Length: 460
Image 1: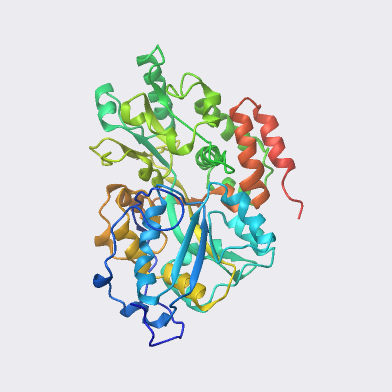
Image 2: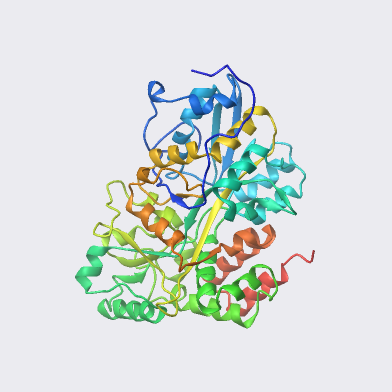
């Protein structure tokens, strides 16, 4: 039933606070349009009162373009159903593995989507430079000011606010099997030295290489390499510290600075060590051709013991996998150099509009509201997603990985930093950094890799 009693735009939801609320992810069959995963929303059960302010949008459509594909897309699509049912608008969802490469092509070719979910603030700046991104409406900015002001800066370019935060995720996690850890007598490491010692112990326990400490994969279509940059960022936070990390992001130190080289060498002790990685897939170079979705799967059968990946990876475990502290798989915090340090790497998406029609403004506002955050929590099932709008109802959070993510993000002892490659200029963060790390995996040297990325940094 579409509401026809008002055509005015207004902020949806009540007063919203600034706490990060976790919301789980579910599954879907494909990356475009129409459903999959999460709860079905029955029209008769929907309270349309919160949507009255949007007015009658019957017969209109909003196109959404995003890098979020199966199995993580289903809960997103399901979370739109109350908005669609109550306003009459149709949301056309398109997920793509080539999002970062194709979005600029579409925008420059006059085929921009109405809304894009940008996973990198650096890409937002690139899109703003095209002159095609529409400034966020006042209703969206008001919601963000009340709900998630700490994330507002990432959606702002040169003092103008364009894009509200959508999702947020924790990246400083190591996935493992509690069962196989118990059988091996392995304990959760609390420092980087303990993590290295644990890796060495697993190698010693399986001298035939049938089980390796780590599994990894960085293939992701046109975005291949991004998971390797996450490793690099996590280690920059740990070996160089948050202040140097900030200097690196802002190019106040060069990309080939000795402190950056130290972090890359530390990553290399894991990802470029044939004794450490990919018993199931092959040697070190197999990391470049193993998809990030498939990379962690050997944890389930015990052929690898650990997989460093973000909270959203929970949606990629096989159907029926029990994700819990005493379940089939779980995650521990990637430790720092000392047990007292708590650096946490995270990221998220931002909703940028390329059209200012009423239905587009309405959908933007909905996505920044408590109503959407609550609906997202209801429709998600398998865990691993976190919304940046966290004044949603905490009782809706039922998945253990959601709660673990929320604990990391709200811990007063945590030092949080946003994903570095996402903050860097798009040509670097979503370009040469990804390519450089991919070439590094397949054999390029440390110095050549760092020099390549440094030499690509825009001069203005």
